Image (cartoon, rainbow, N blue to C red; front, side):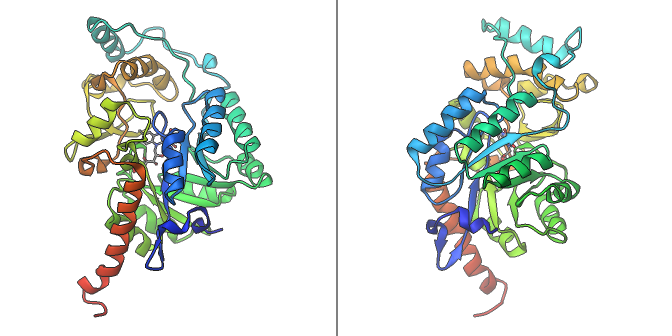
Length: 364
Ligand SMILES: Cc1cc2nc3c(=O)[nH]c(=O)nc-3n(C[C@H](O)[C@H](O)[C@H](O)COP(=O)(O)O)c2cc1C
């Protein structure tokens, strides 16, 4: 299996193939973004974790109406998932920062909406896998674990499986469970992320991997992709840079926050859902200072923060949203179309690969 078969010749300049995969991002990666990327020669992805099965089905249909090319869907099969959100035992009294955030939103005159948190139930996750198979989706990306039965079902239906991992031991487990591609996400990356930097994690996993390895985390320039390709990666999985595009489904306030973010604006914390996530600092994160011991484990924290996150997103209140973003947000300063992002990344990668050897004195 080569991931080059999933991207088209548009990514092939000067005979150098630069496979660029747009990352699955919950609340961001819907059909318009995925189709724009696939149509421009990359591999587009839907962030399916946050969708209901009905919404997921609709987004796949919408993608098919916008593109004839391959589609990746991103789903989660965490081992600690309950059967359904209703099975999760919630604390009798919410942590003080949660109560504080509710009070602040109420003071702003914003009614808090209770929401069904879609990301966690095994019943819905399995239903979405069935829908993807029925639609003949080409690629499944799994973060938060790649169960063996999931890879087996995908392979029986001709689907390629990619596993996004933040540590070498998880890469090993995903390979043992039959994954076709490992995406190593460095500490720099937006959303769920481990604590090892990309170059180290990439080198570690390449030492033992029997499947292609793709680099992720903090990538917003072609020179970073060139470095990863030279190190042995077969492509790049890019999130935050595609978040800030015209076709991205992120709220306008979220896109603005990424474009305006200075370097060092992100933190890595468990405040979103109890698992380590990189996000932009804002009131949603600052309110926990001094209350770190009240952060709940997964998935309780995710369910406690859901009404705040969803209400804030609906009302464009970026200080109260969960602004998942990678360290590259300090370098993202415009909102072009996704095809232009892809073109820039490929051009920059090819330039770096072409000029790099000469710059360090190799060749003429
Ligand atoms: C806003 C946002 C939402 C994300 N949502 C998900 C998700 O639902 N599922 C998932 O597996 N990864 C998710 N990720 C992680 C991405 O798939 C990807 O690994 C990451 O964005 C790569 O790092 P970068 O953002 O620095 O390019 C998300 C990332 C961002 C920025």
